[in-house]
Length: 420
Ligand code: ATP
Ligand code: MG
Image (tube, rainbow, N blue to C red; front, top):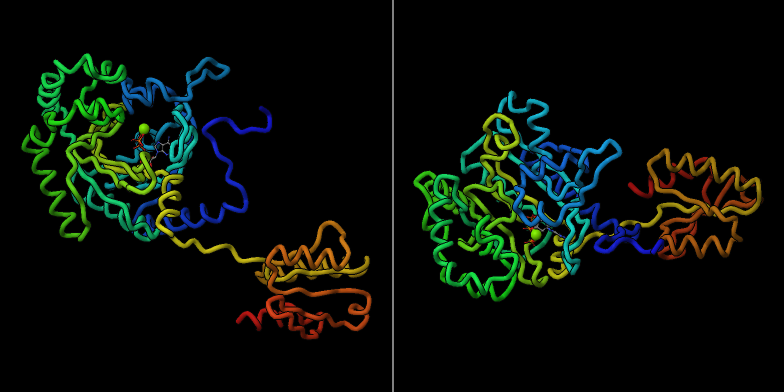
């Protein structure tokens, strides 16, 4: 128990972390290219934020949140998603009073009590972006384009963009009624979850993962056929924007997001190569969220991109992630005087920007070389009493075992010249 991480969580061990650094760096770079700035919000928020923002009849709020009372009896929840927190900060810091739009990106851990399986964890991580303050479909296009560019940069080839419109509070009730009428005589065969969705939010039945429910919704009325003029025009304009931008997409009327705040645009980037958990990135527009959270009416659009799933898809796509370089210089020492010189040399080498290390276990020379080899060291210097007396050290290149004798005072300089 003590030596096992909780179910649905994963350690990121030091030998794998370079993959995360790689995708994190690339994501931040692409966001900055698009003019997004990073926001960091707390890992926990008041439970009420998610109940209202995400929707208190959604699966997430009903049965997936890590919620607890703090010592003062306040109900606190570990973030299950990123948009509500970003929206709360947007309101709290009066960001709406600035020139709009507001373009933010983030990387966060998310917590959902789900059944763990490949690509589905209880603690997972998301990259996310949000654009607040514009209802123009250009913003939706930019958001989708950013995700597309990022996934391409991550060398993912088998991913498909699917778009849909989930309408707005004006047109959704019509579809909702039509859907309920369609499902009325199938109600008994729906799964228990979908039975409870029938009254609360029947649209989510379209997204049920049970094969029986999937079968039952075949031929169901689709939101796209019920869009009001405003939503219809918005969807048309999104499609022509994407075409103009050269982003391939398919219209998938079955896409419904699992969070209540979505309006109009809903989209997913789906991979067919990692099994059932194929949605790498999901997002859309949420024009009523800020108002729902007691802020001034402000439209928004964004996405969440699962980092664990991203790495799974990258792996199946054969994406190349550069492995970290080994140590530049390993300083091997023999004797107390050499140790002291070694320490000052390390400072000098590191001060010059080199990655330099020495043995911390006082091993013999053979042991030090073995260790240096394991660290994929490029260059090794050996300092012993003789070297100290002569003021010279031999600098060995590990790849071909070639050695040169170097003035100890000129060691850093020599290495830097070699590098250049
Ligand atoms: P799914 O339909 O697979 O449950 P979702 O609609 O719940 O996904 P969102 O809430 O839109 O997902 O979250 C955005 C992204 O976060 C998903 O596309 C996915 O990549 C990732 N994600 C969601 N839940 C998990 C999880 N439990 N474990 C790992 N990644 C997840
Ligand atoms: Mg989910």
